[in-house]
Amino acid sequence: MNKPRISYVDPSSVTDPAMRAEFERCAREGTPRPESQAVRAHVPATFWSFANTWRDVFKNGVADHNIKELCRIYVSRSVLCEFCGNQRSMKAAKAGLKEDDYSDLINFESSPRYNDKQKAALAYAEAITWDLPAADELWARLHKHFSEPELVEIGYFVAITMGQQRWLRTLNIEHHQILAGQDGSMAPGFETLDKLAESKKAADYWAKIASKPASQAAE
Image (cartoon, rainbow, N blue to C red; front, side, top):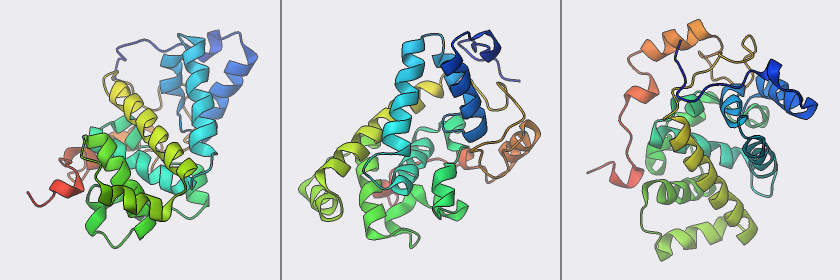
């Protein structure tokens, strides 16, 4: 079992009923899963800042949730955050997003899986994640498909999730270490610790494949 670089707060030691309830929700519903929140719980303000932002900006908000979910996994596959990249939004799945929809994210521009609106949002995520120039052409695409409030929310969400994922990948945390036994939001093949270990051994495991922005794919 991986040893986290910052210890987990044991949910059973938490005396705040609201925080304990949030831990239970994380185990049941995921995104975020309880391990990352068990690190943030060292500072309750940090715990709640992330929980509330995730609820208000990712799960709810003004922009299409499935588009934000695709952007989230695009970031995971770009920065190689395995902890986040092996989770799926249950809300997005209920709204019709399928596992195959995640498969071409790094090369989204050339993929037939995504429509023009999704590609515009992913180009936005790409520019933010890879520090690419945000030229007039990108903004013309974005304004064609999204309102300004949607552009604010998507941009803010990508920035928040990118920063969190870059941090989490340094912590050596893993799933099924806190409140184990529930698989809420885990990707197919990662529902248990044993399945997770087997999936990570596979030759085609996504984190073994080098990532680069779609605009550089032909270089």
